[in-house]
Image (tube, rainbow, N blue to C red; front, side):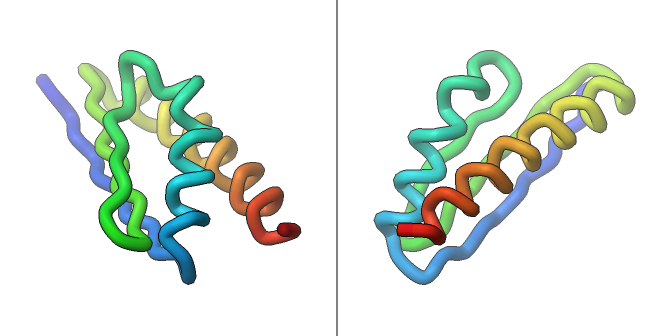
Length: 74
């Protein structure tokens, strides 16, 4: 079974989306495919099990949250 989840994050500026993509890209490797279009960051996560999907979502959202806090301070 293949599980796919797509997350869409809209930011005020394209630069913010690009910074967050760059910050989270290091940890994406095999599980997350992400790209920026305009001021939107779109991330697609694929997994073979529900528990793996939940774990990956938790990790990815934590990374995005930290990156957003840093970007919003600038």
